[in-house]
Length: 287
Image 1: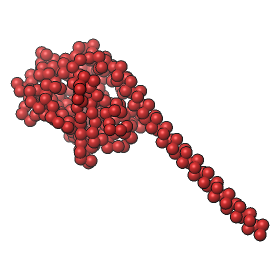
Image 2: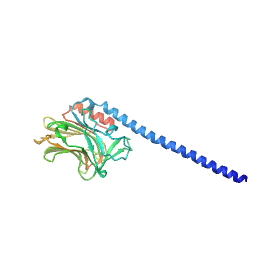
Image 3: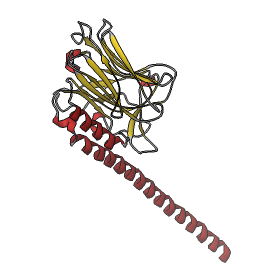
Image 4: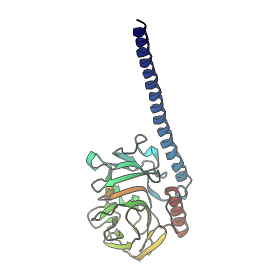
């Protein structure tokens, strides 16, 4: 009788212990989940603080600004691995910001937190792309003879050309930034003309691509603040006058973190300041 009571007591005590353990585990899991959320939002906040104090905010004629670190461009703060169906640019100069969408789940890029540098990015698998929700008049993005574009991207070395950034009305008016690691270059198409620039260690490395079209029709491509090519590019006569969709990541097997477009030719000093801001924010070494 004593043994039966002792066994029963021991069984009851074991169930009680198990219940306590379950409660403790639940508390720990909840704390970890909350902590991850706080770390994620804090990371967003820290990166975004660099954006709002950057030289980009103080310059006029900023026509487009995609910043993956801006949590408010998403409908809600995403988690790593979430598909992205809609984002907004964060251009402070616009009353209505450009919205980029993708309704097809199979073509939606993925929001990720890099396991190496713990920084956010949009990952494209070669089939993904984001498209502006409505057509954009070219002049709202670029002036006919001058503009400056900054792009922070990483390429995974596929065997085809990717249109990382594209605005093309299919009538001779186009602005395409293309990348292909198999050929090791950045290709910039403007109107009916184009120039290419070789890159070093292009695949699987984050790079800041800067493209400037000057008033005297000279286009310059820089990679990590180093000018890699400069040549004369004369736009087609119809350039910028029509409307078309802006596309991001078409054919890209890689990642994008930030895109900034100014519809004017920035000074060398302004360009250097923005490249330094991007390098500091995204932990990229530049010369």
